[in-house]
Image (cartoon, rainbow, N blue to C red):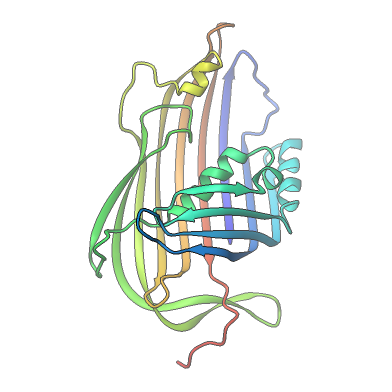
Length: 285
């Protein structure tokens, strides 16, 4: 897995630090092993489910900021500490995630964000139950409750089954580098285009957890993204996923007890690539 994110941020309000970094970039490259611990087959009144363990076998992370930032260095150290750690979780056939273990040790400061990411990965790419064929298009809509300090946000996604092509997976060479090789299987190539929008306009868009802490939020959020996923037609295993996205937020948080407010404007660009690593002999071409 390779992941890179570039963040541009500004803040203003009661407290403002002119020496705070305005731009930051983090790059992560990881080798992750996924073990299937247990499988429960579907039965009458019971969904099928699987227990998985995700282990960060190797991890490299670099951080860069326009100004010296001890917090960025700390984030880099925290990422390096993930090497060798595991997270266990159960996911059912609907993509529902539960019984997560190890998250507090792996992500002590970002458990909520990590939980959201795992849930997104577990859901995968939704598709019509009747099956899909090349050229077919479909869509989905997902509320983003809890992901941002505004109500009414949804992520709309449009999917297109582009074509079939030979599957490619990563193979480690003698120099320790990964190269893409054909596996002998055919893959369905699925394109996803998504957008983050405010579907509903509330007079007060403050989420309930912010309200309980005496805070009020207002502002806007939007984003766009695109991804390509290659899924084996034989095993239904995802061979690779590439994704890029941009999100922009302009949010003001007001403390109703103190009468103070802070405004945050953030723009995030991210790119990621996930490739299956094959250790099995390749089929003859």
